[in-house]
Image (cartoon, rainbow, N blue to C red):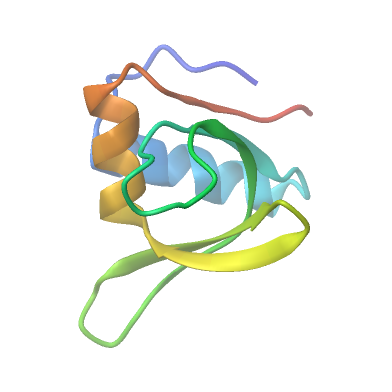
Length: 89
């Protein structure tokens, strides 16, 4: 599924939520080697949620494990290094 919407925090959040609501895990390219010891690689977003302080989080499947990461960090990495999101219908 593609989107021509501007690459903003709100638009990408909506894209993830829509993909997951359609039972389609969302692929993302990890472009921030600083928080992940595995470096740049593809990950699968399997859950999106907000905590009681309204912080955004995603669960990602990566290297056979599930990681819980702050979505703002992932979004900043995608934005700063020309990353993106993708899911299939």
